Length: 353
Image (tube, one colour):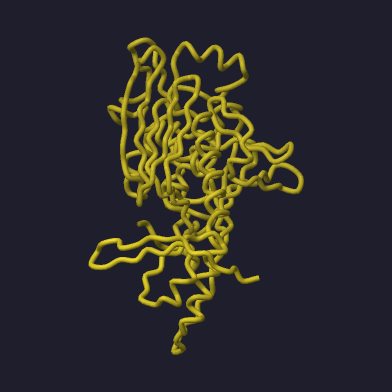
């Protein structure tokens, strides 16, 4: 199982450029944050410089990008920077921006990986808290997307990318570590289909888009300023986006995500459901019991008292004993000999009040 302490960036570091959808110039600055702070955006271009938590509950729109809002304050296209922070193992950071959308760079998350490396990575003194998937969580959409996350002791993504009319079907699978993220995912660029460009422009989107920061698919032709970086670059980019959207659950994930036709809508829907299930499981868990430690030894009455407290909090307690007196405290008694069940009975006991 993954372990270790939380991490933040070592010092402020900035990246300037043009945003993808608004086309505005913007400077993004990463800053260190204390343990348990999480990831927060900060709009330094407006009064009071408000924060927006990187939280799925703040998701406002998911058309061609993931946008967050806190009241009237918004940040758009957050998935690439969040993906890079998650992929590089950063738990706590402030993302300051002097506009409402990060710079697009070359359409990948590689510029953000380089930004993180230039800032340095610092380990903090507080253990990392994971969202460990205990049972499968699945969502399906009318558009044919199917996303499932399964229990795993690692963070793994398996993505099948399918274009319109089943064009450009690609697959990618990897266990995500900082090393695999930087090498296998960060360089993968965003892409679009030629027939989608005009409708997107009519909606006021991709004003900063060009062949400098995207690959355009026109029929069987790929329009790009450079050769494809991977044979399955589009599936890798979808995996990169997925990691950014999943980070909105607020904790690093231990689970295996299997995604067919992922997109920002299905991604954030899965994230919201995953967070809800995790919260439900936490509420069902019994309250911690303070067990004495040190030189003192618990006597049998103290042990039985602790077991009763756990049971009252909802835990199932299985006790193996030779003591008839202790057995009488149980609701169900199974008597065994040499591995065979001799008798089984329910016990009526008086509950302490």
